Amino acid sequence: MDLTMSPPDTAPVRSLTTDDLSWALAEGWSDFKAKRGDLILLPFIYPLVGVLASVFAFNTNLMPLIFPLAAGFALVGPIAAAGFYEIARRREARLDASWWHFLDPLKGRSRLPIAMLTFMLAAIFLAWMGAAQAIYSATLGTLAPADTTAFLRDLFGTPQGLTLIVVGNMVGALFAVVTLALSAFSFPMVVDKSTTGVDASAAVATSVRAFLRSPVVMIGWGIRVGVILLAAAVPLFVGLMIALPVLGYATWHLYSRAVER
Image 1: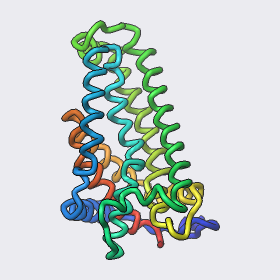
Image 2: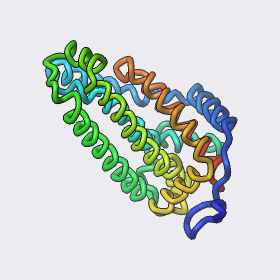
Image 3: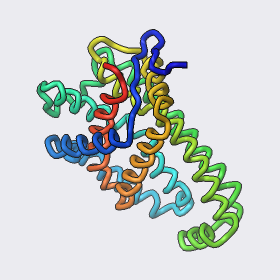
Image 4: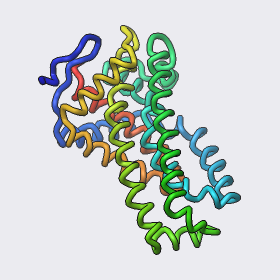
């Protein structure tokens, strides 16, 4: 089957190389220096950090959810990045790229497809959190660690903890690959076709076909994104103010290489 042949309403796709990944990240950083997205995320990230810090400080039972929540940012990242796709699109087309265009994807013909894609990722995120809780309950949860110190001791020093690490990472990787295939290019495509319009299903189908066209390269992209988000999440998620805009811009440029427009 020739994956460059596109069904109706989808777009032809091209093969990607690792050079395309490096190029996209470089372009994303260039866009960030020109349009610093950390400024627009500042009012959202710091309140989120405050709420999460308070919740986890007063409820040690939520300790097992810290890593799944941090990993979950990789699943819902495309939602937060939609505005950055629009800014990158406008800069690429040499149009006005002022910050009031950040919310343009939520208007007009792109509004409904973005809402549908958002529900899709929200469902995947909830499924991931449910799976993470189930894995914890079946492994480390059987030891019922009483506090953070006991949790960390049991996590790295017991068979149940090691099983949690191995199984949790395997299941998490499966969720990440599925999410990457479904959403890597579907959100950028919806933003790109905001004038002419495109169905969410067609955008998802195009994204999956682009993933299958270059699966090894795309998994490499997912690993890069995961490493960057993990590093950004370590200092109480504050690094996401830089990571999300850069990755948003970079994903737009990778989309421009992967999908015929």
